[in-house]
Amino acid sequence: MQHEFTIQVSPEIASNPEQLKQMISSKNSIPIDEIRYVEIVKRSIDARQKAIKVNLKLKVYVQEDFIGQPIELPDYPEVTNAPEIIIIGAGPAGLFAALRCIELGCKPIVLERGKDVRTRRRDLKAINRDHIVNEDSNYCFGEGGAGTYSDGKLYTRSKKRGDVHRILELLVGFGATDQILVEAHPHIGTNKLPEIISTIREKIIERGGEVHFETRVVDFEIKNSEVKGVTLLDGSTIATNKVIIATGHSARDIFELLYQKKIVIEAKPFALGVRVEHSQQLIDQIQYSCTTRGPYLPPSPYSIVKQVRGRGMYSFCMCPGGVIAPCATNPGEVVTNGWSPSKRDQSTANSGIVVELKLEDFKAFEEYGPLSAMYFQKSIEQKAWEVGGKSQRVPAQRLVDLVEGKLSNDLPNTSYKPGLTSVDMGQVFPEFIHRTLQSGFKQFDQRMKGYLTNEAVVHAPESRTSSPVRIPRDWKTLQHVQIKGLYPCGEGAGYAGGIISAAIDGEKCAEACAATII
Image (cartoon, rainbow, N blue to C red; front, side, top):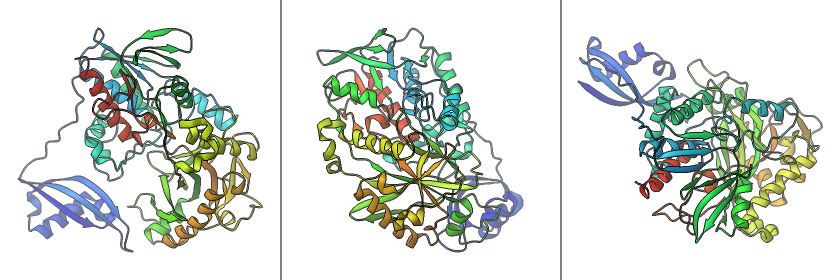
């Protein structure tokens, strides 16, 4: 017989199967020798009180053996000679669109401007060590997209977008730990995700799909408001009337191309700010109300949202036990992001702290029409490059110094490998962002006492939070509102915000596209 319980226990008991079994037995009057197995279905940490608890949803097997059901991948058919669908981009939206195409009996042809997940590492090394930015292969572009080498966090609030559990199960089927099905905030880790991405690509090719790297799309052939083909950088063309655009939020050349071809796009508000690094020990002390984090607790994350000077200011993509990485996609710009390995065992914690932007903030760039937000974003990144020394050295400032408007006389070493340049953040940001950050960090310290410390270092900018452009689509067909056969998809189209939501959107676009063929 199976029983389901929701309980709250200490971290030690949650980590010890025998102690957990004993507690269930005593609290529910079940003889302990009749409990054959305790399955943890969901787990989350409640650190709101000084005595930290772990919330567990359990399935208890009483006088019944537990027979685990291994997660199996769908029975993907052979699609070598099936109708073709072009997918531009091999991030989560593109890869999951490709897998869904195969499930539905269509042949995906994935065109990725960057390199495969392993070769891509050389270009990441070059930007970190030599400050060389490869505009086609970097932290944002390449197999797996931005998430591959910038954390692999799987948490999403977008429960209404689709079947989150299905995407998590697919990831487990392709090699991720099954703990992502249990944790409230699942995470794979930058060190684990590349192997999973490679396995997905191998499955696509094995079943007859195609994946082409270092293949940049530079034009669309449009006739009578219908897509007829794509042109590649080498001048070759591919005839097609089905194209899924899954190019990510940083593919500015695609936005430029659409604008030049008078294909409807829209400016989209986004958020922009800085990435702040603290010691993980300090964050643990604040969040867990302890001197030293115990052995049964993971490195603590944090999440803060405040209204500051009429704008939202909030933490974004928080990386416990992680590092800060250079994520520029073009020479002449500086961009930061953060990631954590699977064990989250680095000594530092970092988070994007960003300020809500509005369409009226982009008026100085209105000559660029629907690209105004993108050019605003670009201007901040270029300013950071200039004041940082015209290299990948990031403009940086101690946190209290930023709040007080003081130039930091010295800077400690941080996890950001290309190096730091001491800068007053007022040189990087417009006044309204700078003042909002100064006021907001004071409010953050009220929420997390000890957060506002000069041992914390601010890195600028955190600017690729979401797409500054939306490629509008019809919500019934998911095709572009103007161009038949063109399916805007994922983060770059403005319809997703992370690995899971992008993957869900990829599947939806594949279904909509395949429905016009099958």
